[in-house]
Length: 255
Length: 174
Image (cartoon, rainbow over all chains, first blue to last red; front, top):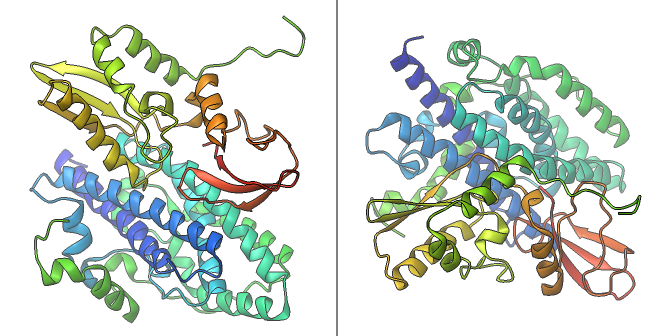
């Protein structure tokens, strides 16, 4: 890879990781003042802050690589649906508390392993962001795993809701491990994570947790992909209309 | 030295940070910034918290390097503003704060004195390892209950003491 090509590919990769973090962080932030109880409200919004902070670091790095006067805000507030490249599982509406916790657990298992691997990136900035993210992700996973156990192995209703959430989410999980030409090229250069290599570890951890939580592992007979190519579910547009409202209505507004 | 006493191990990056300070020709500036506290935990200065990493001069300009605690900690902006304000008040209007991500901030950098300050302030200080026993900062009891893994700020968890019944924050080891 030439330097210029590597720089542009890394920029796109940083945007992808920023999009994942921003979209998930926003979904979590929607729980602010809507949590089932005060402590959980605080926990959800604290986790949201970690992801939004992570998005800021990835976007700032992308802007630095672009060196075209763009900033983190350019990426967050002025792009439309098709330009967002997050994995679809992050954008699904927050649903009930079981749905949010089931999603969080599935992406936390993946996210922790992913960031642990990204710490070895040949790109120093990506490695430094990952180093911070790993520390935070350990806490995220501890809590989301705990909730899967409590709700799965809880009352008949909590069990049923957790099972339904898993069934609705399962087809979005294969995309967590999909690689395309851009990421493969960066992985070969030691910059990106080879997501496909994380699948067996994820499967082992999730299978064990679901069994402990008395939940049925879904059959895996359907899957949806497209996020990295900008092909999203209907819900992302609705989310962006909320997230980007101020900058759309008052372009260039400063806080 | 008894058989049970432990040799305190200082992480390499914290050793380097302390060296940067002690070898710095800008001692008055380091002392000046000791007055800048964590806006959310005013018991600790930014130096004690480990956020303040370096102070250098480039010509007339003072460049202060900080490292973020948590990725999304909203206090970081306030910290940078407070640093610039303290410098401006002391006659250094030409200052800049830069953020450095590596080495990633760790509570293992916190000195025993800083941990004592946290405890006195009512916050259980971070354990020096995962297995460290957590005790109530009010009565010292180790009979405590986790209320929530996340507290009023990203860096803290919420606990309650089962002996004196007081709720308290625990500064999470990270």
